[in-house]
Length: 291
Length: 255
Image (cartoon, rainbow over all chains, first blue to last red; front, side):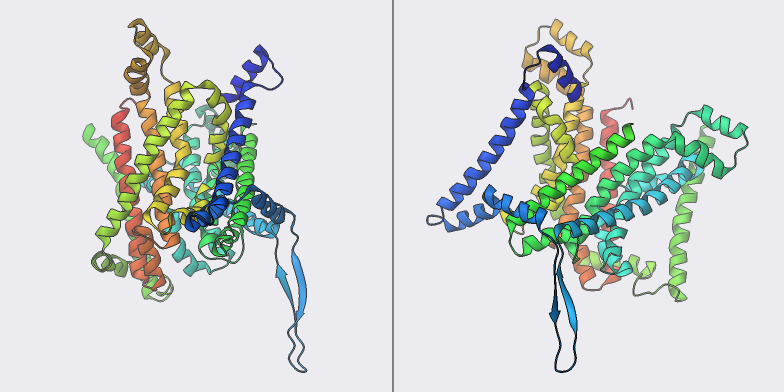
């Protein structure tokens, strides 16, 4: 809709920079200026109202400081150095390692991808079963439908108990989150398949497996990709929340770590990059599914 | 005929319930013969029994009311801010063209991860939870309001014009009522997001209502209690979901 609007506008008048672009630039500039003004105001209050000044310096740190943190997050390499832990004649060296942002991003991305694959395959299988058999759908679909929008993060203590404190429990959290939207999307997609296609498959006497691979899956590309897009979004949220709760790696850990050390500029920097990555990934999957 | 229809509906439903019951009996059996470690999965019968204990000892009613209060406040904020922003975007085309894609993009960003920022601003209080729920559930309300207003049938607007309604009358008598069902879809979506985030953040920052209950019981290694609390949270959200769904059906009887 917005894009269509763009097109008509550029065709009609075609100024160098359209009004929409100006407005966008204006909104961004106003937001940044307000932010910086709040930062300066906070700095100037340090003598008069120390409490408010501290709050402002944490909530709206100067943009320069945030930019500095952003640069540090983006360009800082992994730090590795060996340290000698030897006592007496017993020699023992260990490598101390402070991983960079990209390593944490890799951990989170890997968790989300594995979770989406597990949850997606399970969701597609269950969704096809529900969509193909009306009896199963009437018996079980209501449970998936009503469990879908419940808060999954409350299952996290159980998942820690089952899968440990490592990345496995985060993958389980992501899997649990993305399973339900994918099931519902696939089951709904199954019912929208053109009946002709199914009858063609039947008339060729395809068995169930062939029906799935030759008829159902190709016909449901769109709903499956849509479901996976939705599922990946909630898997990301589930994984990140699990990481903020209990972990020592991943973006969620970086955010809580920054908060625990009260390093708000760093937290902003991590969040900015994370949001950019999340929005970009979502747009990418949306583009793929539209093609 | 109708009796057979009802019977045809009831068989799968009963089958589903029977499968659910069989699943729990199987778990109970597997724990009893030691195939599943009872320290990891408590007996389903123990979980059911601890419902009453948790309800009394943990002050379940007040916790529920606190979570409900947070959800209510978040919903109020969401409705006021989301619908007014949606109306603004609908009225001023330029703003809509400039920001609609931004809002849609924000809907896909994990905004709830900003909760430490809200902790700094509001402290460990109910307002942190309300605000984070509000912020992370705002985009769908704005987008659905906009969708509802834009999808008003032109014939209705023309009827209003032919009666020479003023722009504000046109808005209140034609556009808004016509868009109300879609707006409610948005508000309901927002409420669901808000509830998910409220319980989630309660759990994460260990404050307040039902989310904290799960956290506390699990940190005490009271697993039957924790499973019961999780069951209760799921139950509450399912009831909430069903209730709002019923309102939605009442608002748009055609669909």
